[in-house]
Image (tube, rainbow, N blue to C red; front, top):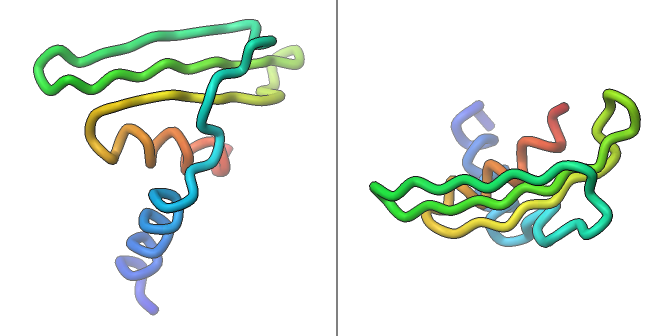
Length: 77
C-alpha cells in the first residue's frame, strides 16, 4: 500500500465514522468560523488542562474537508 492509498483509506474511514464531532458544553474556549464564498461553517469547542488540550469537539457543514479535518487533526497532536 502506498502513501496515497493509506491517505485515501484514512479519509474514507473518518468520513464514515467521524471522531470528535458534536458540542462540548464544559469547554473553556469556543470559536466560530465561516466562509461566505463557499458556505463552509465550523464551530469548535476546546477544553484545556493548562496548556494541553484535554478534549475538543467540532460541528461543521460545507465541504467534506471541513468534517474530515476536524475528525482527523486532533488525533495527530
